[in-house]
Image (cartoon, rainbow, N blue to C red; front, side, top):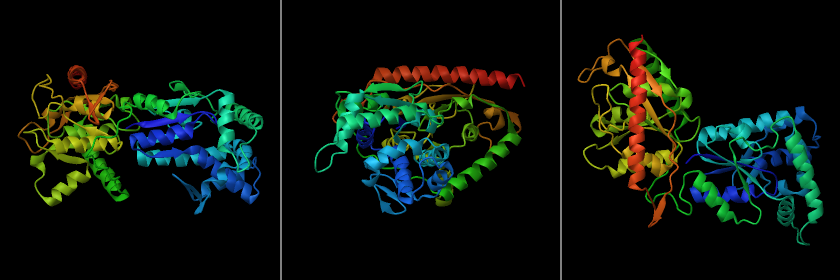
Length: 450
């Protein structure tokens, strides 16, 4: 599931929609507005002026801040306190301070780095925090509707607040947010603008879920298990091993990586390379610093120590002689968890410059998970390590990364599962085969023009 950025002014319904969407898709949500409110609440408690940028920036950096279903500051639950009229009146001025925004944007990007998928709501998510988010929404509503909602949200036992007063406060906040020098409230150029006036939360969630490539009203496929995030130790080990492999590869297999900028910068995607040598996965590992997962033939999982090593480096087994449902589900789990995955669509090593028979598993999995499919062309790896050889030789290689093939197709729900039309799988497989061949021809040209 990709990262979803939801921006918009106060009272547009961001929090309600984001919470419902995250629950629908089975991902976590980050309310960045609550972070600014928490800093504002703490500043008011400490008597810090709303224009004291230096002290406010230090406060934003030093606070122990936890934002989930509840919001806590230094261990104190402030979920209700940060929604008070006093905080409402001050949060715009505090949020406009550049030092505060730098500190909290850094925290938000750290959240993204550890989650890779989820729903983020705020006022600068799609423009500043994650400008490369694959799904961006700018949620708005009429001023009257927003004032009515905010007045109802801030109701006390004696009744709701005066709508006219709330409308004036919202108007002042809008002017401050949209005219501030740092991260003004504006829709991203590629954001989908949704007017929530008179619409139900469910209908808006349906629309955004469709944008994200998820089946509206459907839960994740039954039987899938959560993928446990890798520990710091494993992440460190992977980067060390990758560094060694890449350095060794540059010595024995010198050559360019072209088009790496085409890879999505965040979220899950499926990489589909040509397969000509046992070292292909080492070349593909050069295209990104992110830890990628690999489907590997079950025959290489020979003992506990070696199994631990290659699994730590991202591999998991598949039985190529039969339809391996467990491997497919594992691949789907990995993509849903927001990790990139590598599949060789030919299914085995082939020879020659022409791509072999392309299996439909990669296309079907990309459609099922609703993730971009990235074709990759290779050349020279079969010279560096021919089939049947165990020692690599010096050779020039080239790797060309193509533009992602987006997989937004209409799914049809049946018995609680996604049903992918066979015609869509056939069409995507053909498109993928042509793309890999074109990129591999380009890679071969690079090797020949040494």
